[in-house]
Image 1 (tube, one colour):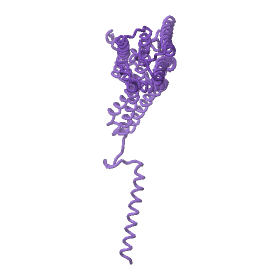
Image 2 (cartoon, helix red, strand yellow; image 1 turned 30 degrees about the horizontal axis):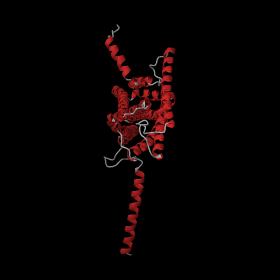
Image 3 (cartoon, helix red, strand yellow; image 1 turned 90 degrees about the horizontal axis):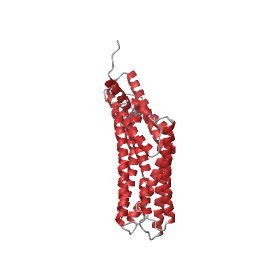
Image 4 (cartoon, one colour; image 1 turned 90 degrees about the vertical axis):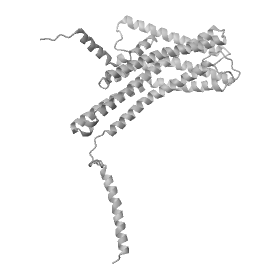
Amino acid sequence: MAIPVSSSSREREVESTTINCWTWSIRPLIIWLRFLGVALPDVSTSSSLCHRWVMLAHGILCFSSHATGHIDILCYLFTKSEPGSLEQAGGSNYDTTTAKMNSIIDFVNYTVNGFGTHIIMLTVIRTRWIRLRNSFQRLEGVFVEENYIRIRNMSSMGVVSIILLIFGLTASSTGYHFAVGTSSTHRIFISFMATISIIYPLTALVLFFTHCYASSLAFESIQTEVKRNEIQLMNGREQDVSQLIFLFKERHILANETVDGINDSFGCYLLLATTSYFVSIINSTFYLFGLDNRISLPDIIFTLFVLFNLTVTCFAADSIQNKMNTFISEMAHTIPQISANGYFDVSRKLFPQVIGTTLTYFFILCQFEVSEKKLCPK
């Protein structure tokens, strides 16, 4: 006799299956990237021809708008004789050639970072996205529902933080122009476009941070599993211990594959971003402390913004290494050992200790023998 299953239980089962999914956990970022014209391959993406054409047209529109904005900035930079800091978008005059060259380098660095990141997202990250997604999808045996929810929350907070930062930087830059009475509408437009284009490096940073966070969670989950089975590892049967070690090794390989996927997908972006951060910090420091002009609020905000991005990038990478080191230490601590009533471990490492101890006492006894013969000659 068949047992009827209620619709509510079916809904709960479907919901649980959906939650235990890597694609579900980073869905906010996927949707946000589509809004920016970067359509990453996704299992939920419609396969209809109309949908693909719409996404392609939207991507071309976003890319062309971004390119046009940067071309306009560079044309203004090289055709006008009054360069200024990037944040002020040409609002200040510099008397020295050094200051003007620093301003030009600042603009070019900013353009290369913003537009270059957009290109990397459309080419490198997009083409390698499926491999990266699959490496994290294979963590279903490692992650629990709580892990996916935490990653989902991280993705959502990342998108919200991008929007808030863009609004904050735009308000700061626009407010500065109104405060100093900038009369050129073109300057204000360039400042606005320069600020808006930060959205692509910011999105790439959040995407990288989310994947690093998920990878560190994988190592943390394995470490938790090791602690949970510590007693069995120390005192279990040889067959059970071997199976557990094989299971941990298999999960450790899966976690390492996520790190390889991150390196493969975000390596080019990290090279561009870190180089741009170094140049931006040098230029911003010169604006703040190397000029006689009054320090402006946009310059301070932009310097803090660059330092924040560099800090997030470095700490995201460190989080994986720290979890990995902790996991290795935990595994080394829980390796099963046979001991002599707890005084020392019995293993092949005893051989060098026996040899060393034997040689030491051999020479001591020989010395006693020689001394005794000298003191008591026959």
